Length: 222
Image (cartoon, rainbow, N blue to C red):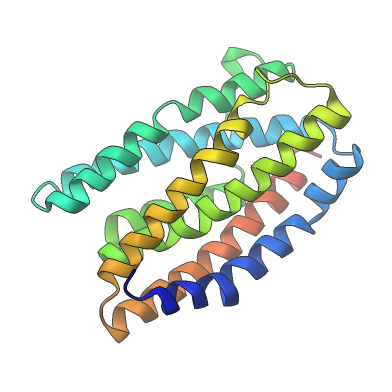
């Protein structure tokens, strides 16, 4: 893959340190210990439901935006087909924790979650082709990792079965492919020093937004 050294540097210098910081945050430290409250778990379900709805709409707009560009159009068609069921998986997790159907459409984004979603949509709609996928590379890498954490400790400490954990079971596997697709797109389209600079900045910012998102959920659902 062209630009492999650039992708490797993104992962080594920006994304993996961000993953490590997120996994060491108080949200995941308490999850591993079985001390994370049900309310904070519910907070993830609600806030990620809202985020997933926005992502699906953003991907639909990306399909229109890139209708003239066969490769990018097909890329976003595939991403939409992969993401369209994820809001319902978030809801399914929340309902298993005691939330009701009406808790989801009536919810509003926590401040940090709104900032994270806004950054994702901004990248989709205003970024260059390579910059657009920088946020995906960060988010898919982090989702894949924290889904493994959720899947393990929700079963161990909270007694949730496979049906309730479906969101995390799916993401711990599917997002490995999504991460690879984002990396391939960046390698293909980051063909100038300017593009690589924009990708690096987008990845750095998205990493910070993602970490802040979980801190925001922790605070908002105290």
